[in-house]
Image 1 (cartoon, rainbow, N blue to C red):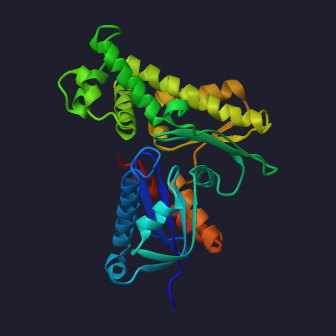
Image 2 (image 1 turned 45 degrees about the vertical axis):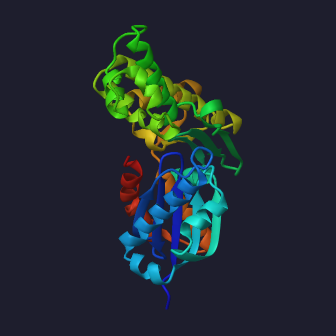
Length: 331
């Protein structure tokens, strides 16, 4: 009897993750590729990112050699990929896997499903970009944000990285106090002068990557970096607060979770996020997401396949949550 398998693709402006799992909820393999958001990278790069991630996941699961001769059969694939079309996912998986069903959506559904697999609440996602999504007890859904780097993405990795680089520019001319971010930026972009950064490939992914340096500087006591993170945390808190108000959940002890790579930033951001939310709704409960967005995408893959996870199978999947988070948190 053929083993029943599902897979999830979770990607965005920085990386792409592929996860393959069996009918028991056990994760068999995971792989990682580059950015997949075709609004910001060429379509060919997005396709290759999916392909790299799938190859890595199949290889870890021991299916790579098999797939080289005959594509592996999957019950379903769910792809959580903002800015990527169905054609990109199909091209990236072509020749590696066959599937009975494929569903491609933005990242809001997987983010929420991962944070609250069995309930309602508000989830704020802060990765390369940012947005918020909430679901009320009566099933109403509201989203906000996700407008991209020109019109939105407040509090995101991109916003933090850009704020940090702007400060480096000011500090290089003596227009603000000195900051450890200057040396970090010179090292990251491999230049000798701050002004040379503008010619060092300031693509969205690279700018967002500088958010890690801002967080490190803040943890080492850099006041400017701390202020940048506090501002980002407030922006994210306001985003979550908008959803609370819009769904009429203020005063009802609603769970609010912060998800995505930025949620692991220095405490200055997290404290500001929580303080802002408490100013909006003192009854809200800051909750940890039960699963990462990639984990949420995997749950949705089971839904698409029509494969129900009972309590035992859900526990198996939840026990694998740490390894999924670790893969997703790697630069």
